Image 1: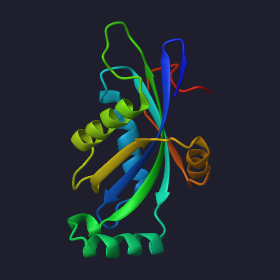
Image 2: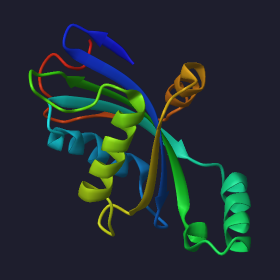
Image 3: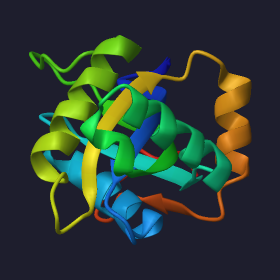
Image 4: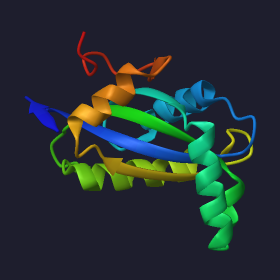
Length: 155
């Protein structure tokens, strides 16, 4: 997390369980656009990719052995970069863990469902910036918040 004047930047990782045939880029667009519903001016850039099939199969097998209903899901990994502007009297967090919780709650409320294909979401701070950067650089696409408040995303 970095703070420049009143803008706070947080890098996060999101692990999404999705319905079969969900388009990762379309889902990421919905996630990025939904940050406009945060209680502060915010914008996001999100890159991602599907989890490799062999890893998904391993996770499914492990989940089935443990009796987890989510074992049949497909998975996407997203590298999330969020900027939000601090305002006097706002209660939106600056701590990366708290920001991750706030985004998870937002995405569960505003994005999760059959229309988006999102079934489960786990969001964590990117404690290893190098690994986060490798995921972001390896993403076949990066989407941004449409209609983001001006001046939040650095040029």
